[in-house]
Length: 127
Image 1: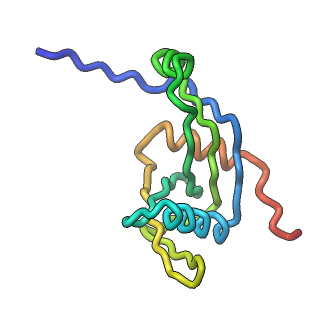
Image 2: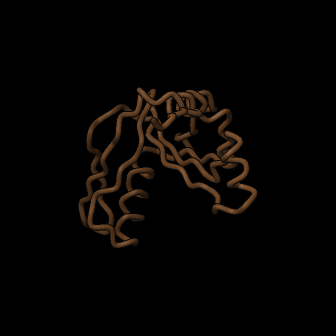
């Protein structure tokens, strides 16, 4: 019989964080999907009061070695503080878009990342 082993990430290293207003975040997701010609609605991850997306570094030998050692490097995490809704709407270029939100409160890594993002100084939206 095949042996199954689960190895959760030991560490997630976030190299750049960018907080956006909800309007800018969801419009950005819609614009990116439109520019890439995606036929489906984009999906963002949500946990603990934040919606977020991330980008990884290219799979170089070094990055792959780190991953096998349990260290995940995220090049960029973009997020916004928002309540959960299964779908959010955004308008880009006069066209309405739907952005799906995936509730991920059962994923310990996503919950830890959301707690980290929540610990950052909130975006100053008054200026």
